[in-house]
Image (tube, rainbow, N blue to C red; front, side):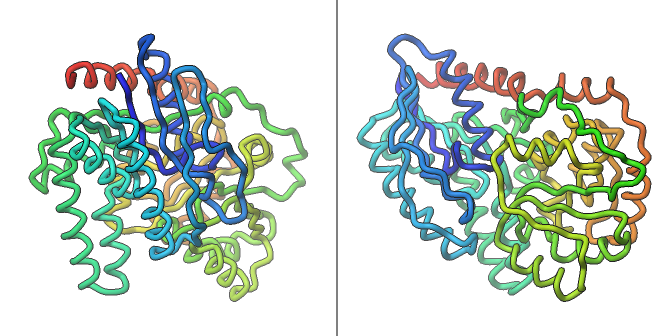
Length: 399
């Protein structure tokens, strides 16, 4: 069996998609037969402009070969990302065709990696599986509708058509949020056989101890680590919260993204002094920031698409056993409410509610049993091990 795995991001790139992809590849590789091959077709690191790490064009580790394609840099804008993906897609298809796979896997948050998977499989006469990490048709239309209702309508119609074609022909589909299937059922897609294997807690974030400091006298640190984009809407809320809570607290933002400049402009405009923004860092350094933090912060804009998602950051945060302050709605809010008792929720965009949550969170007593219970259920290794089993079954049925 020769398997091709399309994933736009892969380590050493730093993002949820890359960490999920390498974990799935790891557990699939353990199940390969003597003559089986797994070929991962990805890009050279390009997630963040200010975090470029060199990697080999080809890496071979036993039955697993990683092929990296050089792509032009992008500034997280739609046009530059389209250009970057187009270069990847053309080169990835050509490489896939030369490899001649029996089965193709695609992990996708922005749909087009999934479409690349579907088109490649159809042209090469093999079956495929989609790991779906976002509802692209709804997300893009919701964001574009803010600028133009016509653009929003056209994008939703186009991408909904592609989703229906892609999922109806797939041998299997996995979703990372149980909020997804209902949306697709309403679009006439049969989701009865879909799988649910969410993101999870990586081993690096298990069993960490806090850095000791004089909590009574120190300024409390509220940490946000991750993408700074239109989905998070940090520029719309953080400067206002920082003003409200005053200088006894400071926000530390570790990350980058398309709205970084908007966030910096909003901080300057509001003359806020208690927010610091740092570029993305490797996980080893990020762990130090996590250990030093008093509160972990999360926020998504209040648009329909984000009421269905389950951010990967939730799993990382929950494993750390620290108070979480989250501006979420819909499924992710319900998930936190059900599984993470040390999380305090406020409505997205509600600065007064966020301030109240922060003041409440700093005094939360966190049960070690609750943290251990969450990790036991949502360990990434446990989840990916089960998912790899299901994938092998689907591949065997497709022979």
